[in-house]
Amino acid sequence: MPRPPSRPPTRSRRRDRPSAPVVDVSAWHRIGVIGAVGIGLVGLLASASTHELDSGSWAYYGAAVALTVAVWLLVHRLRAPWALLCWPLMALLGLVGVSFSAPVAATLCMGSAVLGFLFAGLTQARGVSLVLLPPTLATFVRVNHSVPAQQLGVRLGIALVVWIAAGELPAWLNAKLSSARADLERLAATDPLTGLANRRYWDAQVGRMLGQRTSFAVLLVDLDHFKLFNDAHGHLAGDEMLIAFARVIDENAPEAAVRARWGGEEFALAVQDVAEAPQIAERIRRAVPLGQTCSIGLVAQRPGETLPGLMLRADEALYQAKSAGRDRVVAA
Image (cartoon, rainbow, N blue to C red; front, side, top):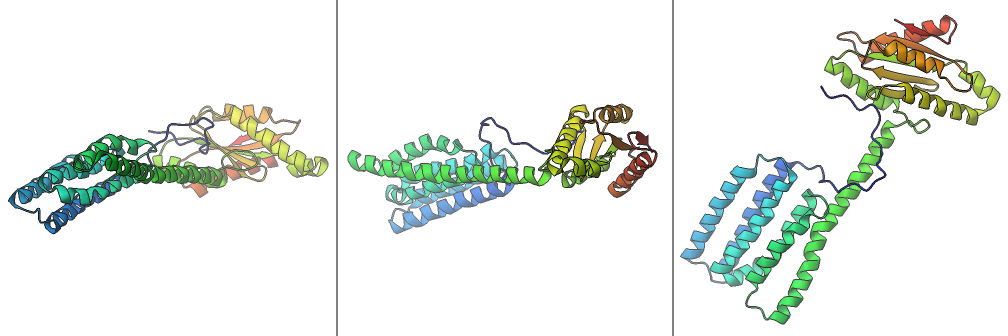
């Protein structure tokens, strides 16, 4: 069973390889096949407008429909984003076919190639749309084979700029939005002072652990006489104390433990090894910095227990520790 994340996601300092945006691949397969069929219909209308529609053209369009259905049946269940690239490639293949049966119509439809780059830019990571350049260039040259070389070069240069912009600009914007979304999620889950998880993240992760029906223990930790420390040393020193104590909790907690600032001078820790929880609590109690002390309430999760019920028992154990003289661990 997968472990819940022990900390809120952090932003990596290294430059990661661009990843594909999170997309509904099934929905984009439907969009892709509709787009491919739509481009085919445009080609059919263009062939009719240029008086190139004959029995051979009808046979070609019938074969194109059959091929599109076959490709759909092969790929529509694939969930990898790269599988979506088959639809821009299908459109290019269709343009090549039209160039043989209706060359003038194919020239009119060549502009639709930009839709393939836009499709790739919306569904793939940065740079992936560029894999469409070689087949699109080959299609462009085939469709415009009768154009003089000098004019072909100018048209091709303009087309390249448009294709790259259509493919890479959406991918770049998607990457920026994904990064901003990740930053917002990290900020929403992190206590800004200590860097530990906040109560919102704690509730979500511990609630998930309860749903998995795995045994774990909760430590609710409170710094003793923190208000007196604040009054004696000032709020800045109090903040430094909270930061230092959060570091103590982080360093003494197992890697898989969920740690959070519960509120004020209270911290919470969820430990999956129930048997080890008392030793962890004692290590934290003995490591409080600046000569201060802490009280800890420790409880083991019970089958079928809710999050409010679990935290209420932890709070009651903490209250017992404070009532018994503080600077101690009480398990309940």
